[in-house]
Image (cartoon, rainbow, N blue to C red; front, side, top):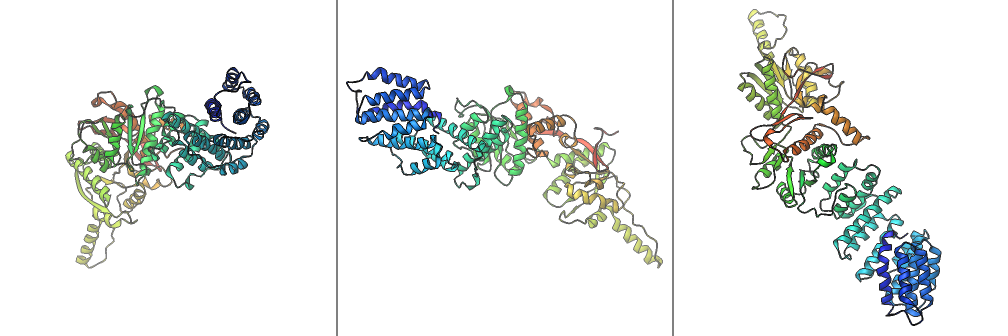
Length: 615
């Protein structure tokens, strides 16, 4: 069935048909102007059956192409009145002579009648026999009807391709935007009718983007606002897609009456389609959750830029040109370095990683990161606060272990502590006995035993002993390694030594963590519980009752990144402090965000909170 958008265009079509009939007047036997005015007025008022009858009466008063022009108008009005049989009757009464444009219109109305009679496959076959016009108004007419028929027959991808082809015949941006909104609504309706839509089968990226919107539009209609993160994810995957303005208006409720160019917004820069996409998606979901948890009146516009598609420099340049007042991101260390190298002036930047320690940050450049080195420094301060100064360290081989060990030792030494020795173990193995016995000097105990037996010439009862001057162990490793390392330390007589780790050692699993008894570590409130993390979790459950995004540490990082960004907007940044889900946040003199973490200790497989300061 033709859509209602035809109603408002038909007056112009009627005028064109009459003009194309070659009739400057309606003939000497009619009172044409008032009767024609009445027919057009009836059509405008939605009384299509009356308009059709009036056009039929006008046809009876004329002949030839003039008569056919009125009959075509009558058939069209009958279609709009849902009188398919009357429309077919009137169309059958049309006889030569017809102008070429009248012949084309008769063919179009035949297709519309087939649709009105619920014969979409017949309509598709009829349309296939019609040559697409090269005249702009007629080509747009043909392609718009083809789009309707394609949707009626379940050919959704063909409908999208037809709409894309039709746009080149539309003379104005307003008409193109209206057509895109109509297409979005038609996709939503097709999804709700259960039409099978398979975006992955579309080779063309633009077509695939449109097809993905079908389910998003239907979900947004059922639960306005809840789908916003998924919609923003779509916008990130398809930057510059022709549907973007329609998506922002229809699915996000953003006023698009003003051009997006130059509109103030917060730019979020993340590598959403590259190797780092998993981490970036978690950050984005946390960021957008915080966005929608804020009062609507306090929310700025947010635009997402994919730094896997654009370089960090290109993304920032685009954001600045489009009116960004604050830039959040980029995410990786290399991207952050590239962002810091850009010449000023540009809006303030909240980078989601740290520059190297020897690299000063430019003006208005803030840094926020989940830094394992910062955590290692906090562990060192806790060790000293617990009254322990002499210890050993075990870390995995590789860059992460080396950085964590270096940060820990620097902070420990600065506070008057001393690292007796350290060892790096291969995390690909499961047996770390060699490294453990090395740092505990158990091999020295074995050597003394052998020397005594050699001197005495007799076998002696022997129990290996570790060195006795160790006050703590720093054992930093991921959770899967920590679950192997902690029992092996106990096996080698070090179970009674206070042992510390970073947050990497903790992943919630009471059964798997049973062997972690006594291990102490710092972590964010998001992982350990308490406010404000519990409130945010409740809000996230409300937003995604069926599951939603994975709510890991990076989700919490994105959540706090949004809150920091809002604190940096229009305030004196040096005074920013925030009780976040990733810790208590504050800015240091170098505009780096410092996180003060909570402390916990494993008891029976569960983390139990420790006092903020040692007792």
